[in-house]
Amino acid sequence: MAPLSPQQPAVPGWLADAVLYQIYPQSFADSGGDGIGDLPGVTARLDHLADLGVSALWLSPCFSSEFGDAGYDVADYLTVAPRYGTNEDLAELVRAAGERGIRVLLDLVPGHTSHRHPWFRHSAQDSTDDRYIWSDKIAAPVHEWIPNQGRRGGFYRANFYPIQPALNFGYARPDPAEPWRSPVDAPGPQANRAALREIMAHWFALGVAGFRVDMAASLVKDDPGHLETAKLWGELRGWLDREYPDRVLIAEWGDPARSVPAGLHADFFLHFAGRGLRSLWDNGAGSQGSWAHGEPCYFDPEGRGSMAEFLTAWRQAETAIDGRGLVALPTANHDFSRLACGPRTREQLACAFAFLLTWPGLPVIYYGDEIGMRYVPGLPEKEGSQFGTEARQGSRTPMQWDDGPGAGFSSAAPADFYLPLDPDPGRPSVAAQCGDPASPLSHVKRLIRLRRDLPELGTTGTVTPLSDGYPFAYLRGEHHLVVVNPRRASAELTLPQLAGRQAEPLLAHGVTAAGGTVRAQGFSYGIFRL
Image (cartoon, rainbow, N blue to C red):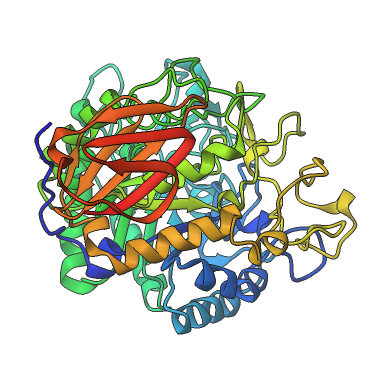
């Protein structure tokens, strides 16, 4: 295989070098004793992140909300939800994180608001207000259109849940039969674009380093190829580059080949968009936290996958991006199962992290994955977590800090916790793993430190795949070999290009490389200096 050669990314240097950590705030650390995590709790746990080695954290939405969709129904973009604290608490988190070399990113929900947002309450009464999408009759599909209880009457278009009226960014294509289709340059869509800049500028002034943008592809409706949506983000990127060149936007789009050229600094491979991520670890949001689509994935203990699909998707994205941004690879997030789910055992997680932290993407660690927290099946619905057949609550359980009754998450009675703790008596914890050099936590720390110390392992070094089966082997730059074998059975690989080169293990478990032959035991990994 030919080498893949990412150019120097056209992103701030700190993002190119970052390891990002996602925090679901209601489940991370509770300082107030009410069973719900909060911002002072995050601040109190920053030393864990600094010790881990992450350089940026992303908070899921922490703005004022009725929490019908866990905060993705925003009632005020400029005010922290009281359950999490105050704007001053967020400012203190940004300050304290900065002292530790950690930047803070917030979650921006641009496509819809809560039905309790003042913008919507006004629009529901005033027929001249087109900041939302209105029709005087039910349109197809019916489930997207919700009867309005305000003086205006009619119906409004919703994204996802009925409590989430869609903000109007216009339609790419007019249709005389659907007069509610505003053009993208209509007053309402233009007001909403201006509001996005105002919201971002407000938090930038507080020191926030950027935003992860929820459902970034969903703004302009009936937009073939997302062309108008891409123009919208391109305009915002131009504004950002002029006014805030060190701040970033990371898309939840799932198609880096389209979103990064449009202007976003980075985008995720995600479970709902193609096979790029699913071919690695197909952990979806099913009721048991098993494989999302029942298809083969590479990090399968029985070894039924291949890296070929991932490599194809990666090449396509890198070619389209052409050095202008980054592809983000998450271990998991609040919407799909953790790495430890279904048939995947904790033994395999070391291989997954060895790959994640030596591949030239932007690595994103979901809180708790660094200690091997598992997807917990069978939990009750909580704040919109049960979305159709997707039981997302199993990935939103409280962080496991210690081995006490409340796992160090909260002093409240466990019955009052946001979600129940993992009931497994052998559940992992930060405290139990901190002093154990063989623990998952220590392994992740070593990998992050190695990535930081060796630029060839980062986003700007070349990567040359040497195989796509078991084991998966690749060169980083000219001097580093990485091998991962995430299946139970051992594997062997002949690499003639390595014959005569010495392979010094920097971090290895169960892998040897000598004389042009790589031998890998089950669930093994190795990083070598050539």
